Length: 506
Image (cartoon, rainbow, N blue to C red; front, side):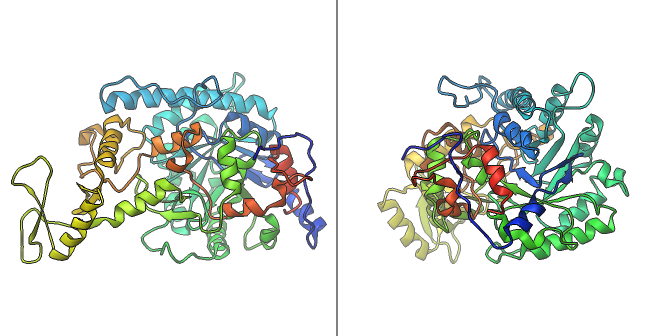
């Protein structure tokens, strides 16, 4: 179905009780990253799913626009799609150096685009994945390359998730006069940050922290901060978690520092009780998945149509990311294959014992193999009969069984590795030269190549076999009247139209 992108198409209004009252609350500015802006923040999605153009469009509406500093696009093809980084290095270390250089160039390019598009309004933020390869060098390079001639920076704040900011991160941002907005998922993480990373700013945290982003680990898309103390299958009430967060912030002189609620935010009328609430304090709301459904967002029309067709439960919380973090993604063929791959898994030993008595031969290695229980051998024989005849070891002393083609694909990902993560479970890469650029662990074939998965999505080659991060409320897009015009056709609003709609609570 074609998308309607008429700039002046009417936006349907959904009346709600007390609509005028909630609007008055939602147009009240909140102090974030050094300026009074509307309480709406763009979620920073990695590897090209946010860029300078749409971040600048958000800022132009006096809100917070967020560029991804992870895999930032440095050039585009003739169809306007992002080009992959042109690696030429023969080793992972050489390709890693190229990745850092291209990321800095892309980050500077996207920031300049956002700065121009913003018209000097709002806030420009850059989001970094703490687990990304070379993240400190990339952040330093981008911030140095985006300084303004008269002082200051085109970037107003750095946000950082999938790992906590360090003391060094804080010093770099302070040196550049840029706020740092930590992304956390529980109150323990904030306590650790205040004690370690921000200890130099004790009793004056607001000099450096422009806002605290609470990213709900059961609702947000992308990487989630579920800890070993929490049950991924038992979501907790975000209100109670944010209330506890505010209590710790108040105890540390951060009464005026805003909290940004990220994850699960769709209709703001559902969050009305959070507004002007002393238990919550200054509050803003982040929109990651909904930002994809704007004209300025760079993802393909096919991706936008996919979002509009999702059903409840289509987003899955899983642990397939090579970072080791939980993450939430659309359950397409890629995700289903990963679930099936992990299901074809059994423990093994190198030598037979009283339980592991049955030999599973290693292809091409005479007189060597793995020993499994008789019960598991029956399962394995069935998998082999179905074509899953390649056993691959995992770091947990188990075997998974895949087809020959899948085994070759996994090996190719490892061969092509450019160190896009600080440590990668799939390839065994580590950016630490003191460890020989390796994690020292067996590569884990139960994970995916995050760079190829995300790049495939933004380039639009095959969405069913690409990595589609999505929030757990993405299914609401199909029922939201915002995305239909007066004739019932699919309508994609501009950022301006979307922000206007947010002020109504709908």
